[in-house]
Structures are given as C-alpha cells and as structure tokens.
Image (cartoon, rainbow, N blue to C red; front, top):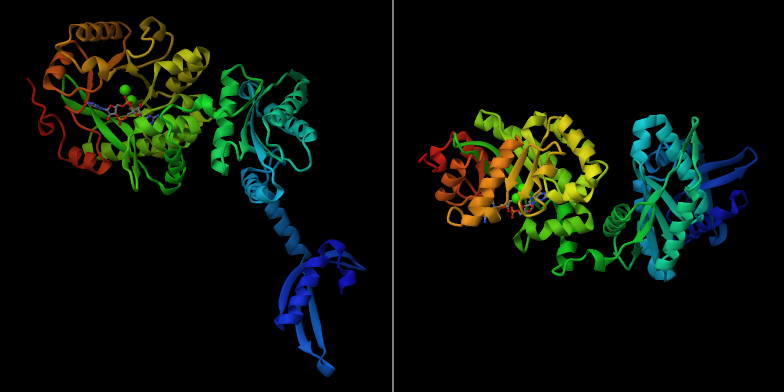
Length: 515
Ligand code: C2E
Ligand code: CA
Ligand code: CA
C-alpha cells in the first residue's frame, strides 16, 4: 500500500497505520494513490485484526473519491477567492492572518498588513466603464503579485481595495521597501482598449505585533494609515503611527472593549425630538449613538466617537446607525401618523469612505424611507478639508433628495458665503451660542446674524441645546425654524419615542405651551 502513496502523503498514512495497530480501532483517512490509472484521491478505511500466531494485520479498503474531492476543491476555491482577479478574498486572508498570528511566537517573527487603494480608480470606472475598470484591476493585481514573494498573500477585499499579508516583514524599513516595490510595479501606464491609463496607489501599513495583536485592529490601523496616505497627497506608503493619531486622553483598554462591543451589539441609538417653532409640532428626530457597556454603563459618544474615528470602527458603526435610523423612522412615522424627518450624524471618515454612497442607497432602499425625510448632519471641517471632493459627493447626495445640515455651526469657519457653493439645506446653530440666551448680548447678536443670513441663502435653521422657555421664545421671534434641546425633549429610547408619538405628541403633551 505505502508504495502507491505519494511521498508527500506517506507520513499521514503511516501515522494512521500505527494508530490502527496500537489501538485496535479502525481509522478513516484521505490520501492520494498513484495507481496504474494515474493519481486519484481515495478514502481509506483501515482496520486491524489478529492474524495467526499473535500477529496483527491491517485491512485497507479504498474508495475513489476524486470526483467528490474535485467538487469540494472547486467550492473551496469559489468561497475563498475573488471571481474577477482570482485572488484570495477576505475570508482566505482572515485565515492566513490567523495562521500568521499563531505561528509568530514559534518563528519569532512578526508580519505586516498593507492596505492598498488605487488612487482615482473610481474616476476611471465612471468615465470608461466597468469593463475597463475590471481589466485594470486584473492587470494591476497581476503586476503586484509579480513583485511579491511566494509566501505573501495578496487579497482583494473590496472594489479597488487590496490587502497584502507580508509574513516575516516587521520593521518599518522593510515595509517601506516593499511599499516602493509595489508602487513601482504600477508605475508604467496601463494600456486598455486604446486608453493609456496612469495609476498610482496609496498604501497604509500596520505591523504585528507593534500596532496590534489581532486582525480587526491591524486592518483598521492599516486603513487609518492609508487614509493618511490619501490625505497627504496620495501615491505613497504610510506606516501607522500611534503618536500621530492618539488623543492625550486616549484610553487603550476602552478601545479594546470597543471592538468587543461591536461584536456583542452593545451600541444603540437614542432619538431626540426636533420641533417646528411656529407650530410647536414634532417634525423629526436626531439619532444619537449610545454605548451600553456591561460594566461601565452608558459611555458618552463624546468619548467613543473620536476613538472610533481613529481605529476605523466608525465606518462600521456609522453605516449601522444610518440603516437603523432610517428603518426606525418608518416606525415612528407609523406611530405618529404624519411624516417625520430623521437626522443622522456623519463623521469625516465615513464621508471620505468610497462606499458611503452605496451605504446611503442601501439604507434608503432597505427602509423605503422617502429620501427627502433623511437629513445627514456633517461638520464644516468636512467641507473645508477637501472642498472639491465634498462638492462632488454632496451633489450626488442632494441629487438623491437627501437633505444636508451643517452641524455645530459657528464653531468652525462659519463662512456663509463659502457655504453657497455646496447644496446645503439647513444650519444647526451650536449649543454654545444658545446657552446664554437671551441675556448674552453677544450671543443674541450672533444668532441674529446667522438667522438672517441663513434666510437670505434659503437655508432652514435649527437651534441646538434649547433648555429654557425664554430661549425658545427668543429664537422663535428671531425666525429660527426648528428647535432642539432638553426643553423639547431629551434623547430617548425608541420605545419611549413610539409611546410619546402614539399619545398624539403635538405641543400640549410635551408640556410646551404657546406663549
Ligand atoms: P451633536 O451632533 O452636536 O449632538 C447633540 C448633542 O447635544 C447630543 O449629545 C445631545 O444629547 C446634546 N444635547 C441635546 N440637547 C441638549 C440640551 O438641551 N442641553 C445640553 N446640555 N445638551 C443637549 P450626545 O448624545 O452626547 O452626542 C455628542 C456628540 O457625539 C454629537 O454631538 C455627535 O457629534 C456625536 N455623535 C452622536 N451620535 C453619533 C453618530 O451616530 N455618529 C457620529 N458620527 N457622531 C455621533
Ligand atoms: Ca448632530
Ligand atoms: Ca451639534
């Protein structure tokens, strides 16, 4: 029997034979057999029995399972590889990263994860069509694969996003050298359908164990580094740098808990009512994220949102919030009996994510929420850091009918003239200018100016953080359209919101009488 078995499989078979002899129990193994008909996969059933004079013999019964094996192999390949490029997909990459982590102590070496994104790929795809885009991805991945070592894994994890696992490479110098090799491989133009295309690549790197001891953290950090590569001019390789992104109050154990929390579903949304000032009717809600930590209780978004921005989890959390809020809005509307708007906060990193529009479309499609009932709250910073990009994206958002509000207005650049350039629908005046109303002359003047300019620009206005009746009266007189704050209602659990709306929540049951 052993002679029929290819050398590579012999060890396994011999071990099974030994065990069969020692334990007297039968064993079932898979092995190739080189028979006269060629090589084939067999399932071997081994059982031992007592022969003459106390000798033990083994009976091996083989069944040809080549056809089954081939189908399984095909299936394995399908679920672990990307159809377009034939590269490993995210699932296989996960496997290999886990393996690299498991082997690291024995090999006494770390590894690096590179996150790569082709600069401007979307433009090529949009301008020249998917066929050219697909061909570009195929050729680019082939070129990158050619400069990698056989132990490296190049995986395609999204549209034009690739991840490279580099076992044994765990110093910044080696990482940068690899980054340069990859960049060089993509340097010469791509000749596709008579188009000469020049591509560059932005690469972010995270090193194990220096930058993280698990896959989720490493991928998120490589992504952070890649974002930095994009922000600082594209076409470069950047290694993750904790010093650069850490806030002074950064809490490492809280960050670790956060990854856990995503898995355990500890995040939820509360909803704060927004009231129309002249009718005193609830016209919408802002979705505000909460983290219900099993030991710490409610953790404030002021604490975990900046952290999620750093470690990349904001993309996951943000798209969850968007979808959840849109679905929830439909339930609110049913309970209320009139249309309600839902406002969702979008952080800069989400906004820069290539998939933002498709996440938005998905949220609208899943919930069947009319697009003009969705308001995205963004900050001025998003507009100022990359105005061209913001303009294009905001245009695409507003073409869908989705409304756009500038959050925390007054704390940033506050250039209303500049805002004209963007398709914005409303301004939210920051709480800081509302707090000391109506007694503060300065804040009253600021609100006044903002409100009158906003009306010239045809923007609706929301006052944030309204806590007193006097503030409400003042703002209503100045022509502020919408009011949000503890005076109208605190952020509430969705079940409470439904109860409130079913009670016919106009003004009286909110305890907000007209003066
Ligand atoms: P924000 O967008 O300015 O949200 C308004 C904040 O003011 C909320 O704090 C709200 O609870 C609080 N607030 C509302 N009315 C009053 C009031 O009358 N008085 C006072 N003192 N405070 C009031 P919260 O819920 O702690 O959220 C803090 C920030 O976290 C938010 O500020 C927002 O920037 C961010 N955030 C919350 N949820 C999300 C989310 O889903 N995604 C993103 N990207 N950011 C979020
Ligand atoms: Ca907000
Ligand atoms: Ca705000």
